[in-house]
Image (cartoon, rainbow, N blue to C red; front, side, top):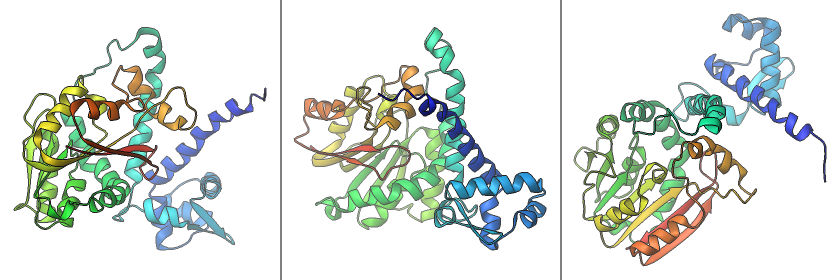
Length: 331
């Protein structure tokens, strides 16, 4: 047994790495270096920052593989070029900053939650907040991080090109649903979420020029009608927020046509396994709020109980932050 405490002391240092990247994103440092390489002196003049500490910042980014040095000049690594250059279509810096802020906010509340339980922590839906998130952060995440996985799944469904109607349930920005519609020119789509969120998705429908084929439907998934006659339903990371998952899954089942397909992508948390420890800690704050964290096989068993006749499940590591469990189930 290793009795060295350094394993735990070194956890404290990870916070510095996240802060360094957060500062670089706030300064739009990668955008400046994309235009031309800089020494720390020349970059500090552009940024109007302290030269000594600018060098430390740059060297820190080199150590976490976001920059590299050629002589005295600093340049973006390919990963920084792809995801952290502000203004690029593939930019995901806001995703990082949002999640950094979200996790920091949760971290500061953990002590109170351990002592007093959920207490005054609100557990009610916050449509306005989700709308703000969907407009900026979740669009970046869906477009640049989730979309390749989503399209790979959908395009490989045997009956996809023959499908006539689909639902993006809990659509957020609506980008996944809109890209699904682009892959099948005959399909009609519905994007469902809170009214404040579908207002944002509606803007994206116009941006895509798909007003004739994709519509929005607004409401609370647990309380309101989600439509019917669907050949395909897509949903990702929504089941944690329901008081009664069985009722929602029954509603989904009832809204599908015979042989209709549900594609579900969610994180499952196993507190008895260290294999996917990130899953556990990513959902730590959610779990402490007494939300419905999903256990392994939980959704599979619910799908069986509701009556889905075919269930194909596997783990994907191509999703942001943590591995996700993919369920492709057929009515």
